[in-house]
Amino acid sequence: MKTLWYQAEKGTIVAGVSTTASSPSVRGTGAVVDHPATSPAPAPASAPAPGLGSLGLFTVLLGAALPLIDFSIVNVALPTIGHDLAAGPAVLELVVAGYGLAYAVLLVLGGRLGDLYGRRRLFLVGMAAFGLTSLACGLAPDAWTLVGARVAQGASAALMLPQVLATIHSSTAGVRRAKALSLYGATAGLSMVAGQILGGVLVAVDLASTGWRAIFLVNVPVAVAGLLLAVRTVPETRSERPAPVDVPGTLLLGLTLLTLLAPLTEGRATGWPLWTWLALGAFPFAAGAFWWVELRADRRGRTPLVPPSLLGLVSLRRGLALVLPFSIGFGGFMFVIAVALQQGLGMTAVVSGLALVPMAVAFFGASLAGPRLVRRWGTRVVTAGGLLQAVGLVLLALTVWRSWPDLTAWSLLPGMAVAGLGQGLQLPILFRVVLSEIAADRAGVGSGVMVTAQQSALALGVATLGSLFLSLAATGSMATALATTLLVQLAAVLLTILLSLRLPRTVG
Image 1 (cartoon, one colour):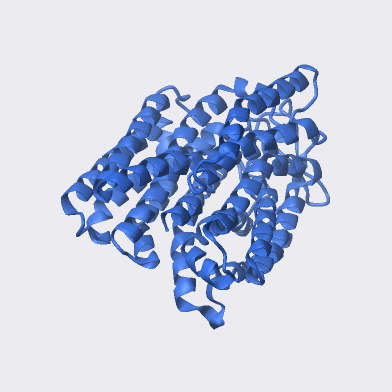
Image 2 (cartoon, one colour; image 1 turned 135 degrees about the vertical axis):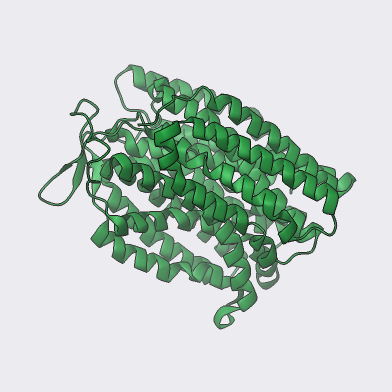
């Protein structure tokens, strides 16, 4: 069972990119076309948001929530899937890993295709494909069909998700953009918790006798509603000077992520066979080859998949430096707390999910307050958020030491709420920082890079903090393992606090 949990939580990940907002122009067709970075200065913060209304924002945020919900929603259903489809642990791991790997590998390409063919168009294609692949998952007659459908579902998510941030960046401005990015950050945090709770509820209710299949079939009407809304409410945006797809860069990025994420995802469950070590050994060479190809293309005036020149932007470079340790800690925490509460204390999936509700509520509230706080205090809000998260983790560790095995969701509430408050003051603002200097015609590339970095870091957090926790739990007390892992995460939070002091004081 530990193996299933380890794999289930692993697939999350990606980090953001920034873009300098340039003012979009609205043509007679209703499409919003980004001007290059040399266009006139963006509208002042008080200007009305161009193009994306409240219902359109809701629609793209729905598209952002679905991929994250569907990663975590499958966790609680794995034992039932294994029983119904006669699937062993290795195949069940592929149900999770196949989705996560396809999702992470194709995200940057999805952002580039949105720049090239239009972001609303790719959003619609991704949403339709997500609905169809969810239907295929729900109707899968055997385990290997389910694995294939999950891979296709991850690829569909990679087409849809990068268009969300790129659309927000290209069709909002000023205060409206700040609020939209805060809501995006809140959506990202809430979706993982909501997926865990929703999965437990759907499996327990056994909706129309569909059992575990309901966790996939529920996506179909949601995707249909999203399509109808997107056609009417989401403006078409694209890069004015789209670049062709960088085929060598795309292949090498895929190889780089696969050689890192595949062995980390499958290694522990399979006993670290030879292929996992060979893959990890190949990772630095694949990463080096990818960087060399991209740097060469950038110097020759081409447009690589991930332009190395983006790292010349101080806000992007320093923002990503915080997003990575933050996401590693968050991904590891979500996995560890789920295993500890369900396997260590015997809580049901629904009850363990409800234990995370104080964190989700505090995260959401802090995300909404973030734009107003940033206008007054700048990026020092991120530093304050890190300090609050550190206090929350200390409270949780002390609660575990004092109360185990009589730990309840109620006793966890103070630590969860304080940690969630701190997280909500960090992540949405970091998204703004990362995207603040990226030119609008690179919005899709930037969004893809950010999400890929974030998702990869989430998976790395599960692999590292999760392995530490399971190793300690196997040789001693689970309470000690949980408290120790929380303190290790605290070290990552202290690193983000120090790095936050180097962020630009103001956010565009």
